[in-house]
Length: 380
Image 1 (cartoon, rainbow, N blue to C red):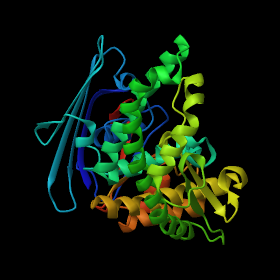
Image 2 (image 1 turned 180 degrees about the horizontal axis):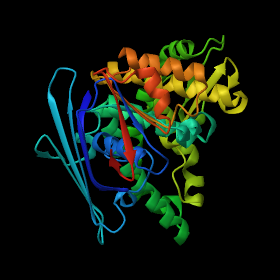
Image 3 (image 1 turned 180 degrees about the vertical axis):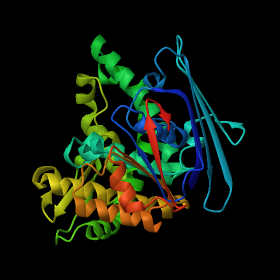
């Protein structure tokens, strides 16, 4: 997939910005901090993932003083098929989001996610390798939701069942009800948690096996070290050798049920999974990796994610690199840029404050690359 244009209206500090004729390989957005470079990447994220990669709230995307945000993105698939997405977010008593793709109103986010896959890398994402398990689950969901419509539907149904089950447990805790008293209410939601939870776990386990060699290869491409990064999937934080996730979930449901009533929340399921990253056998990255190793591992993860999505989704992802080159040492930065220039990373978007750096590396005459200046929410 390759974006050809992106139009922002009342998005962050952009009143009306239309970026057309985007280059097929590298597009560098340069300008001072606060100019609105990241906002353009966020708009691409909104048009592909239905949300910004840097904000949990759609409301904060609307330009201050306005009530309606609009993003319009046009792109072309690997097979040359045009793709047009228009998104409106309107503030009010209740935030309203309207998505139209190829002249058709999108009913659920699942109808859009995965059509134009994207890989996002920002300095903030170092929390994936060094932060809590929830960040690694977010990484899993981000990749697999774009790779598989079935996974995304399972995830949405699982969240719905989990929300209902937690509401019943929380209410029972407040009213001091027993497990037997609420069991008839819990049973149908428990069944859905078991069904969709097992499907999610199976897909996560398979992903781990498929992703491992890609991660090792990408790490070797960008690093000359002899480290052997890897990853391991622990369903609910447990060592599970059989792969019978239905039985594992059912067993944990029984073990946890009394404690669930006492605490008022569901204590089993893939929302408690862990994905562990290692820099060497037995050396968990979260505990042993240096700052440099964390950076290298994160870049390798994103390169591996790119290759995984390209194969699984059947479409070349767009790569969004937000202020990444200021974080990398010169050698790794050059390797990343060379990969992007070769076309191996598809269409790449880069934000930076250093125009001269990219002018010297990319040159000014190639039709494959473009450098755009962003100032005060507009393209100069």
